[in-house]
Image (cartoon, rainbow over all chains, first blue to last red; front, top):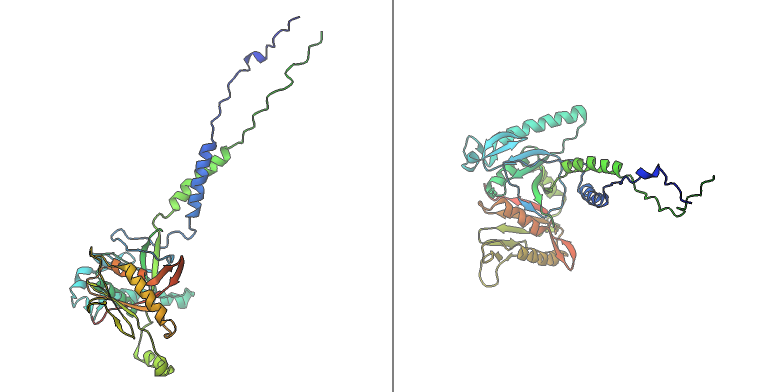
Length: 168
Length: 181
């Protein structure tokens, strides 16, 4: 005796489509691990200026926070504010230079350090005397030394030269 | 009439699939977040500590504490010139074997020979280690037109050397000297 075919099962042929996500997951996992590895919780402490090209170095020391001094080929800036033109500094213009000290830079640094010292007294924010110097890689030594000398004489003896780290 | 029991006794296993959607959501959120926070350019800093405002009083105070005889120091100096490196110390000025030229002349293609400088400084370090207290300090001076990049590379060369897969610290405490301004 023949059975009657089930009427319910007649339409049960719907094809179940599913994306195969496994390979994509693999890829994402690798990217995620790579990104977490290079992730630093500190954020960007030093933002390199667009006006200059920093030199390369094999140093492994991570950056620290400090007063930013930029020395590009055109001008010297403190915290992104132009202070002096490099051309005047190179010419040893007496209006700008005084015995190897860049006068406007010195004034600016003294104002900033006085302000920072006042903050130290009032709020206990320690004044470290740290300054990060971002210099263009083609800067001549004589101009760099002038900037360093001025910083040293203006309450900022802890200098940090900012460089690009060469990846090994 | 009783139905006959289904003959499909061995049903195929139900395909069990992980629900990947929540994980995917997480990935999609996290990857842009991390990407936007990543620094692809690694920035580092070189320490360059000047003595804090060397005044006449502090200099005599330091000099007064130590008897003169014991203050024997190496005073290693590397001078960068447009012809090459000169290395000098309390002992002697090292010169090229043949002439009175620079200790380490430039390479034939006009670039500075940093590897040779590192090797030479390693020799100095080994010789000086037992005699002098200041075997970590070095003074670098340069001619007026020497580029900043050259200076930084010289500091790199003076910092450490790799000998037999071991990193030997040479002279990491750098001071700059400007001569007479």
